[in-house]
View 1 (cartoon, each protein chain N blue to C red):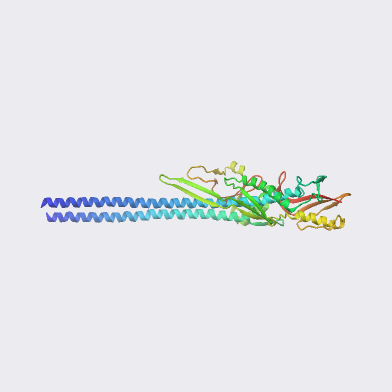
View 2 (spheres, helix red, strand yellow):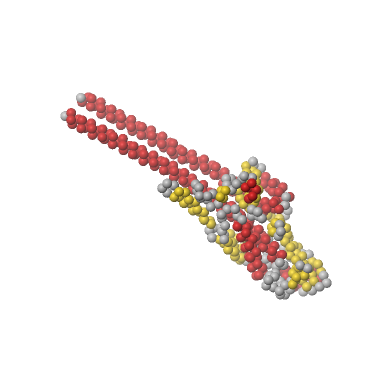
Length: 259
Length: 157
């Protein structure tokens, strides 16, 4: 009888010890779950913080790119005006007193001006983008549709990685850096040069007609010489451009029309 | 003997109850500390981040804002470039900044080189804790294209 009771007490002891062991396991599991949740929250906070810094970097880059686009556009406009809006390499142009003489074979043509604009624009814009302090330098492809410049680029991808003991976390974020620039909004009128030439040509060398001539976006100054007219035009608006230094001035367009 | 056995059984019951109560207390403490701690972290982070985000958006929208200076429409970002070209625009710029940020903020305008020499450094993040593919600096700042890239940083007065 006593032996049997001892057996029961032994069973109860084993059961109690089992219960305590089960509880310890349960508590450990619960603790692990809680700490994992806490770590997970920390990781989520990290993701949010990294993503937030990506959004800010996107804003920074896009503002820089848009401002660069404006500067590049006015620089290209200045360079076109500096060459009297003609293609010196392709056209047979003559020069007198450092002024290009506009003739039937050497005068501004909108199509070639647009082509030239894209070349000049691309050069300045690429240089500015290269100067962006961070490692975000996409390659842009340019397209000029009517008066709108379309700047297309591959999406920019940001990737962050964090290596933990058993796992590697990767955060990916990408955005499209493409945008458009409306040239008239930037006071850039590429058709103006051919319009100026056509208006002058329509005067047919009549001096009073040439003196009365006016252009929407340009201030006109005309000097008459024995064998030619010297035109010195200036834009009504100011532009950012660079020759030897960076300037914010009116752009000049000078050319000669022979009598 | 039966009585002694009964006392033993009662003691076992009491021990069991004590363990259960202890477990309840432990779970209660865990739930309060672990969850409250995590909640606190989110709140704190969010407040700080909100201020930075607000400053970031304010500076961004101001830099894009069109201003009329001497009958010419230019953006605030262009006015900053202008202030670097011509000193007279610096005064106009300072006035615009005061108006836009209610005199509570200063705008630090630096070149990349000036920024490094004044100790306000941008450092490219390497593969340390986390890899970031761009320069990292605390606070609100933007870059403006010019001959020499201009760095604009918003600083609380």
